[in-house]
Length: 182
Image (tube, rainbow, N blue to C red):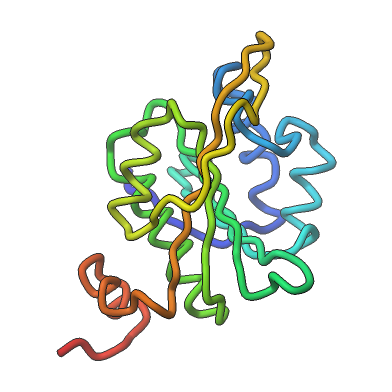
């Protein structure tokens, strides 16, 4: 069965809760929000929390999730990306497809910059985002404490959308937005 990426709505709340509940404990360590709290996930599905959220649906099950949330106030031109892919789907290209969805959403919503926080040991995630044009902006040493109490470094990667439109053509974004490409 093929995976379909759709905007999160109330009909997806229970499947998204099952998805987050099935993640290994180690994955949950590096997700900032309380994604196993039914009230949190249901509020997102009802449109609360700001930004736009998408789920990759494989039939009735969620295979991946991505959110683009504009930052408040003087950083309202910046969107924060949150991306989670099922461990069974990692390496399949699903994460790349969801990250591209985040870029398309950001451009369509008029955001000038996207940021993503990645724990430094998550090499595959770092590679995915750097391949899509994100570059390192900050390394926050000992910034994350995992569930065993170990401190981890956090990397902040950024994509300056308005400065890199030409680079986006290499990942197919103009076509996804319906733009002409020379």
